[in-house]
Length: 149
Image (cartoon, rainbow, N blue to C red; front, side, top):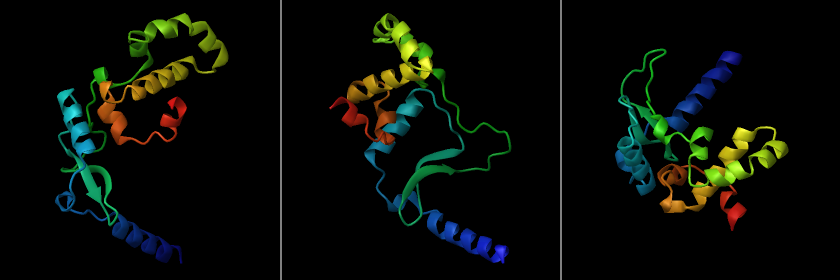
């Protein structure tokens, strides 16, 4: 009985996520901009195609172009494009966060996470003037704009 259910679920998954040729869709400019930004900043993904579209709904994702072996790294992301708390302290708003470091630490259980959230909000507000704009532009940050409008 369970085998029949699993079989039907597998068939449904296959139908919903069957690979659709990315050429059938116009690649959105924002995904292409992100891909170029990532490449220009040193991201290496030799066995990955992005963006790729899947299924009837054209869901955007990554497509493996070759077999990825167990424990094989398939995306290399340089630290210069990773948003982390150490970078925030050296950023253009680092001095503000240092000034209020004590207050942030008292009001938050996780000071580093709070600092990252403040920095991301600040960078997101800069829109196209942010180094990370191509990244922010492809992810949904529900409610982010409501916070600063």
